[in-house]
Image 1 (cartoon, rainbow, N blue to C red):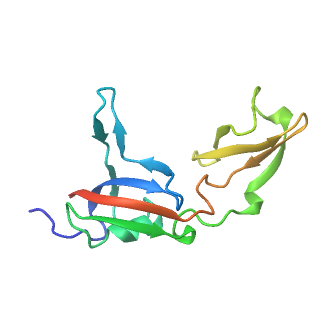
Image 2 (image 1 turned 180 degrees about the vertical axis):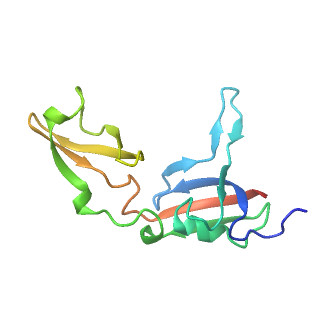
Amino acid sequence: MAKDKIESGDKVKVEYTGSFDDGEVFDTSTHKGEDGKEHSHPLEFEAGKGMVIKGFDNAVIGMKVGEEKTIKIKKEEAYGEIRKELVQKVPVSQMPEGVKKGMILGLTTPDGQQIPARITEIDKEVATVDLNHPLAGRDLNFKIKIVGIE
């Protein structure tokens, strides 16, 4: 039997477009294919289980298949504030060869998790590495549409 409304623990499929307040799109589940047509790759996750940011998780609870809405997620319910302690100076000698300002490196934590490290400054001796999530410190807007509930 198909579910009517999303509850915590339901597996959901969501089409979405994420943007900043200025309208710049930072992520979407819809992409133009080589055929020139729009193709959707819905995000699938278990609602209410912390698999996505808190504000997104909370927004889908109670929605129905086919329902659409636009939400604004404050940075506190998204990727949080920018944390100064996550910006560190690293000797260039410890960096991969050819690293340049603006590059994003994938670092692996001791528990095997991949985290992005953005190079914000670099000179001959020292690189400044920002380990904050690239969307930290920003309010996010999402247009979401529920395309499936299991």
